[in-house]
Length: 338
Image 1 (cartoon, rainbow, N blue to C red):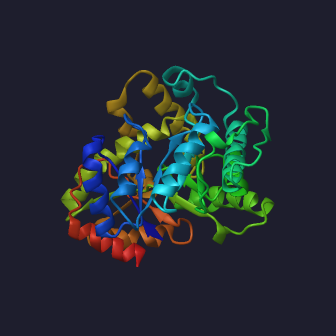
Image 2 (image 1 turned 120 degrees about the horizontal axis):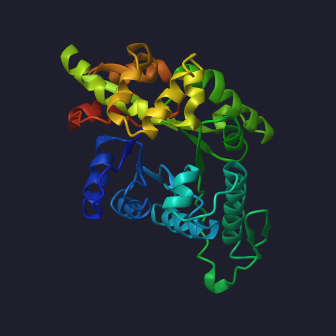
Image 3 (image 1 turned 60 degrees about the vertical axis):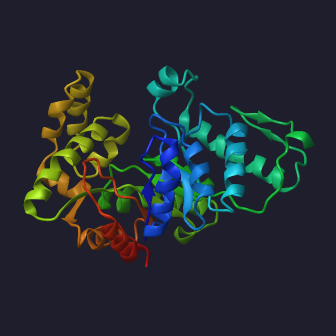
């Protein structure tokens, strides 16, 4: 299991220092977010100012960008980082695709499947020096690549991870991709009984095994120096879990534990804007299932104990202001990356 981190700053001028610090502390990868900022620009700065740590968006929203546009950005970042770049892709939900990005909504899994296939075709074309480009699908058709527009070939592989929760996209990930960004709203039971088996169905179709595939997520952790601090930290995690659990797409994570009836209640509260009270529906039992609780000294051990054999990478989700100092992060990196 590897420990990663997220570039949380939205100020590009702060990225070089943040990236250098993350690499020095021992994190194995740095992920960027598309939340109020572009997901790729910070990675260019991070790549320029680091030499070891892996880099990628978690995740870049695919459909507002054409596969060709996504391919150019990825190709350049792979070259700049000397092969450390990982392309993380996500679909987003209908409301955001149509109303925030202004893009037509189409069947997301089928379209993402074709998107990944188109990217592979483009990368192969460029690896072969810009030889004939030919991809024909329902959503994308690519047939033009001239020497002027073909980037310089390089031998760096570009792993593709996609984000997914439900059956069809998990199978697609296993069949076509190098890894999966599992949602932060997860549990060991959901991973073991639902997510991994469906990924393995896809892997079998592509002639690969679980060892050939990477599953990563951002698990909720509740951390403090003592019982009082841990108790105070629970409120923020409870609230964040209620936000995710209100989305119908993630209902399977609740249903796995017999709590499926909570989802429509949370969805109704969210529709009314009753955000403040949603956390009250997340019981202590649910909090124990969906978050890992511990002290700064043992949280790494507890995360490994819960997710060993299920996750290959973790990146702590800390929605409250828990001041992990450098010494703590360094120790956690040694525990999980050693």
